[in-house]
Length: 345
Image (tube, rainbow, N blue to C red):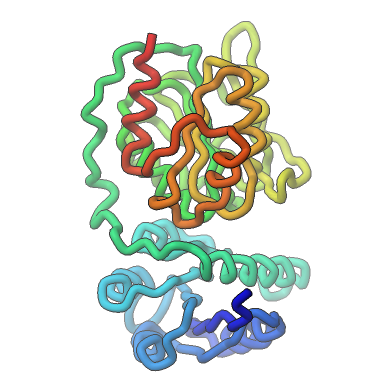
């Protein structure tokens, strides 16, 4: 086992926050703070000089905004970046530009919030360290062409369930962006904090053909609608005489997460069975693997993202190894695989 520490460069314009980050992250035996930077220009110089494994970056920065900096960095000197950001729409532009993941900035006056923030940041630095650096990033994901395969049969009985974690915001977007407007109802569980799931849904809604929104308890599913699980609730599929709807309720973490992919997939297995398609995407850990296996056992068609296109080949790997995945596919092809499956009589 390589015991070399993960070299981290902290980039933040607040002296107080830089110092707190340095102090807390240094307590982790696997992390070494090699330096701090006060703005993107400073960060750029120190990346060249210190060659860190990971850079933490605030999106709102003086001299150059974080997104512009990221795009420049990914072109000139690709480096793994974990964003530390307030509730801000540009987080998704930064993930789009190649950042590995993000952590929401804490309210400094709430001790509990600070503690969970540091746990999460340490964990995401370690995940980013083993993640694949996305270098072949589509210049503009919004301009990706939609699938050339036509959707032939329209079935309101079909349900598509997608689960993802690290790297998943862009992977899910790449699938949804290529699907036609009248696609069957889609449910997405993406590990993400509250607040961000609403912004993520709004972003997808702007870019994709179908309607995308953050799920609300009781929402009905119909063709041309994708629902994103809210950041602090468990989303489950349910059915009554009128058709499919979702239950979004506060609950304990399952498989380490709320929302949990396992919770979604298990409910889809039970409620929709063979009328469903399950897709497990990039992410650390194993959330969703058992749920996808339940779906497959109930006759659902199951797709796993392949290793080569994953930022972290964790969740799809476990799902594949336990026999939950029928077909593995690169992210660029999953929309086509999905439409072909929907077209099968």
